[in-house]
Length: 517
Image (tube, rainbow, N blue to C red; front, side):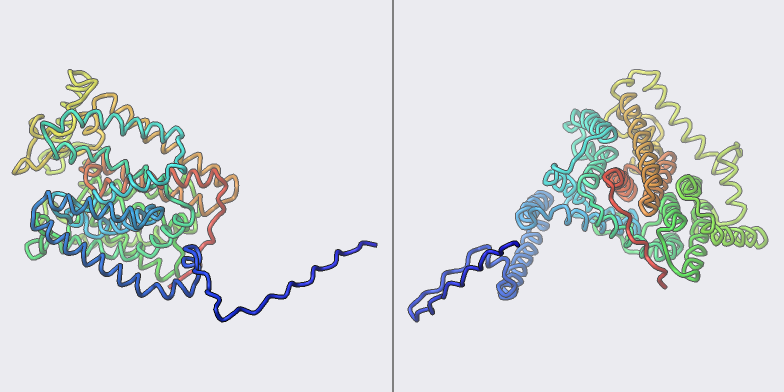
């Protein structure tokens, strides 16, 4: 028989005397006590309001003082944010990055020009990425992709720093081709599984509004270009539609639905695919790069073979194709190319065959001639090891300037720009980096499939299509060196690294959303 120890009798507590003075609460008690927090809330709100008012006054004075004042104000605000946010900097970075990505998606180049004193909103995202990485170094893992990424960043810096004295800020502007990769480092370091699930859910809510917005934005940007207000301090209109960028987003939205991340009613999906088809026709008529980028959505079949999800988009595509062929509408928005069925055919065929005396052939020959010259002075010339560096205007120096005010700086291809500015070592690092990332995505997909994690497999497929569409578009357009393309690309790149890490660590699947009207 087991004996239980007898319970110790409670010690009676003497009643408190009237002269007893209560002990003051400690700092921890003040923080953890709900009643204390509630009592302090009004005071904290007043304090926050006072800080915001003070920052507004300081910012106004700084803007009036000129670029130097703006830079000083930004530095002060950044320092204050560090003090107040502390370990919450990664969350602040995620919030700001989400806002940037949304702005670039909706307004394009118009949103990119928001800023003051020579500083734009994209620079804020890069600065927060660096800070968030610095406070989260314990989560940083260096694998093959990360090592190549760091080497690419280092080589980019080596080919930029020597030219700062001669070109100043211009060299830094050109260097965003590699500088925006700091966004990828920040995302790869700080992104967690719960945050990724929130990002996927928010993207699902954005998909339908985006495909509805693209045709509207294209018409507004073309027809009402003179009436749309410009971004303060720049000639760029607030609403700026670029068909190549839209093609990348259309590919990603299609992949998002096809792999099963978008779960809505049949009616909602029919509206989405119809709007997607109209947007795709518009993009394909205006840009060959955008047309090919949008078509990369079909590669989602490499990851997820849910053939039932292809029936609705196939039906919509068939109806749109036959209708365009029979009616053959022609819409002239005052742009270089009209929107018509014949224009779609011309764009598609000009990719593979020469079409003399056409605008498509002219731009094709101009690009090829410039790219050939870049190969001549790098692979076969004096800039093999170094390239021309960041800061010099390649269009002027190579003799291919076609815009007023020397506005053109890139050879309409991120790959050839990297070759021209960083030499053969730079392009080798660039190709290795993209190949290593793609291989990591396939390994993550195989691991997710083998362990039965369908949701993570779908996420990998979606990110891969985003990356592939961007690679296609940046091959023939100025994409990587602009924040509306470059920040999106490197954010997806970093998210892919983080997702691969989560899958390797055994992160369980998310619960798939139910149909929602």
